[in-house]
Amino acid sequence: MSDDTHINPAGMGYLESPLRKALTVYLPLGGFLFVLLFPFYWMAITSFKPNNELLSREGNPFWVNSPTLAHINKLLFETSYPQWMWNTLLVSVVSTFASLAASVFAAYAIERLRFSGARHVGLAIFLAYLVPPSILFIPLASVVFQLGVFDSRLALMLTYPTFLIPFCTWLLMGYFRTIPQELEECALIDGATRWQILTRIVLPLAVPGLISAGIFAFTLSWNEFIYALTFVSSSEIKTVPVGVVTELVEGDVYHWGSLMAGALLGSIPVAIIYSFFVEYYVSGMTGSVKE
Image (cartoon, rainbow, N blue to C red; front, side, top):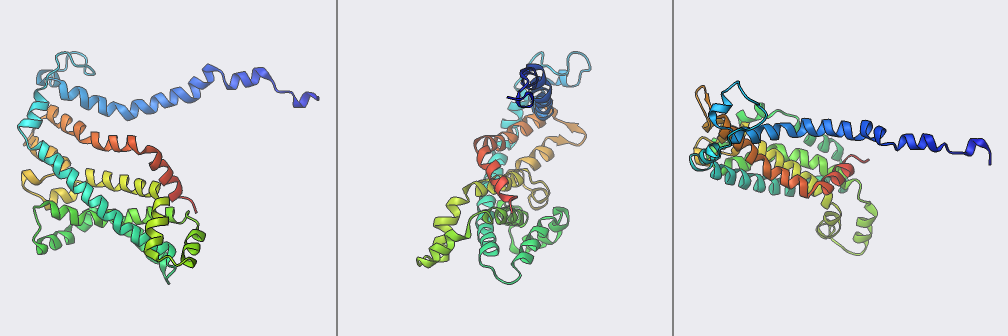
């Protein structure tokens, strides 16, 4: 065997050496995790710090010397935070399922029915997502008042799909495009209807895309602020993003401990959903960008 075909063990050992792995894998990953998780750590320690430590310049700002539950007690029992959580969960779930249902029909029609101008319709739907909510909430406020649903959870359930449906439709269009059309053509030859094809063939194959779109829709609904601030005024109807900011800030007095506790507890449901469905989420995003 010639010298050119020999593999240098020292070179391969260098590629797999602990030092190189630490520099190329663990060090960048550690830096990324630090940047990603530090805000949650800061929220956690602030939630348990007494006011004298929060306002003091002495001591270690990255640790708690005398932990307290006073801020969490104020948040849970002196505000309507449990009701805000329920409002946010109810509005997010209803808006997500309603938006997914509409997006499935829209994406399937655009990708599979092959009507004239389908591509232009798909582009128009995606461009609608790019319109800032700060512009849309003015005409939507008029619609909400005319429907008589102002200051109610229904107002949010009706307005959130205006920015959820365009994005979910665009995402599902990309995923439906990866499903072979031969499956539907064979089903049509066998006498299946479009509804049967959608419910028995397309949707089971598109579960990763549906989960990915659902996670995005739920996250956007959970964190939405402008519409919730504009269309809801009663304290018991507010969502977590609005309630925490408006009820725990009194003039120039910021209840930092309760604010951080509210933000930390409000981020837990979304983190749980991502952790359970991360594989479907990655698969759905991969399929949605394929041509």
